[in-house]
Image (tube, rainbow, N blue to C red; front, side):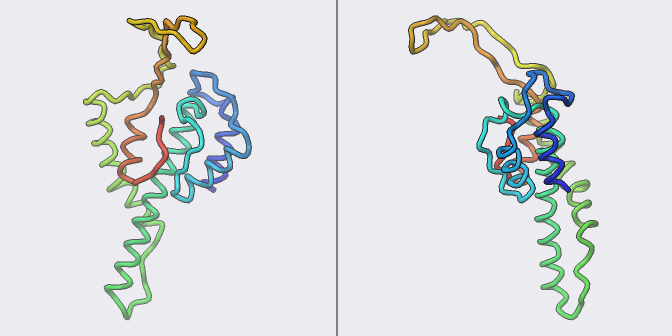
Amino acid sequence: LGLLVVYALQRAQAWLPLNPQALGAVGPELAWNTAVSFTSNTNWQSYGGEVTMSHFTQMLGLTVQNFVSAAAGMAVLIALVRGLRARQSEDLGNFWADLTRGVLYILLPLSLLLALLLVSQGVVQTLDAYHEVTLLEPATDAEGKPITTQTIAVGPAASQIAIKQLGTNGGGFF
């Protein structure tokens, strides 16, 4: 279900809210590859996150998968420990209860604390559109044309970096 939701979010992101850059729908092959990689906890990105995925797609699709995939790994570890500890028992626990506990009691609180720490240190956390700023020292491109502005990508980065680091996931906002 998670795979299909992430795929659908990417394919429909042009019409969804929180898309200040008006990014179009992600192509079917890239959307499928991304959905599979985030669902399977490989989190392989073959795209630039800030120029491909809207804030909404990153928050609802990719960040949720970062939480769920990390919690699934924790639930499997708990089942393994229970199995090694109680050799005669046939009860390894409830996977869904362990997954929920991992998200609610471990990953979410730690992610919140880490995100607040990151924001306090200057990591961006906003739903604003990207900022166009004037360069203090204009440069020239390969054709000799002057470059006087730069686009600064901003978005909900701190919250995504927090769970990315806690879950040892590869995918991030940038």
